[in-house]
Amino acid sequence: MKNKISPPQAVFFIIQSQIGVGILALPNLLMKDMGHDGWMAIILACFFIQIINTIFIYIIHKYPDTSFFQTLIEVFGKWVGRSLAALYTIYFASVCIVVLSIFTRILGIWVLPLTPNWVINLLLMISIIYIAKEQITAIVRLNFILTPFLLFLSLLMFYSLKGTNIDYLMPFFQMDLSEVALGLKDVVLSMNGFEMILIISPFMKGSIKVRYKVMTIANICTTLYYLFITLICFMFFSPIELKVIPSPVLYLLKTISFGIIERTDLIFLSFWVFVILATLSNYLYFCANGLSSILKKKDHRKYVYYFAILVYAASCFLSTDNFRIQRFNDFTTIAQYSFIYTLPAFMAIIIFIKHRKGKVKSHAS
Image (tube, rainbow, N blue to C red):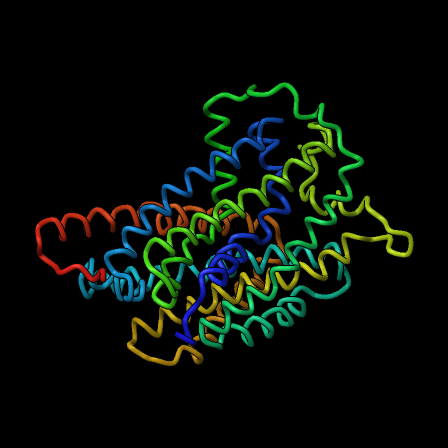
């Protein structure tokens, strides 16, 4: 059991996978789509994600010790399963490209305006490769170690409470159903990463109940984190201001100073790099792991380099233009709906029908 992932490690791994660049712009998106009730969408998203987690746990229950990519092959058959596994690796790579492009753009604007984007990209990619070429247990432990960096943002946001105005949240419940749907979409897409449980589950300690508990705790913690950050932004900026500020979290931090520290936002981004590196290395590992599973290879390390070159080249192309990033992000959004929500639900139905008819033996212990 020494090489297994413990439940606390799994919780923080999922949290690190979920929290990335999305939180920096989420308050702005919610204000545009739902007005001052936008923060409520985060609570609704928590319940929605928990429903998806319940679908995930059913798949895990039937195939507790089988890798997700191998499960795809067993459920859908050799050719269809391998094709879907290949599409999942492409999806993970596209997430890497979007996150790396957006964060490179942010660093280029806020921290390193005179440094070419390809240099920032290269430095980040070298660090990501160094992490992603390790085994999943080592990567999970690194995510666990980096958790204090998430708390760093919370502490800074606590300090900004003195400048907030709760009247900006009033009155409640002024949105309609169409606005709720838009806000829910914004939050769910920003909180993606909980699907990582499908990949790491075979490496975890504990029963199916323990794994479901891990998913639930991670979902609640991420929800509370997003809710806290968003509420602070909603109370710090007026609704008119929040609609025009693209990265409210960074602009809020820019207003905080501690005597000798004038640009708190720059200090924050210097630490936030490690959070983004953790998220990117997780996705890059799963790209390489997916390809090695398709090709039936035990060592994933050389495939890390292949995908790193692809992600680096695509990110260098996209990070020079916000319009390009947005267009590619739209493509990734469609893929997220397909691979995180639609396909697992369809997969669970097929598993249920097969096991109901007794065509396959249950893998559950």
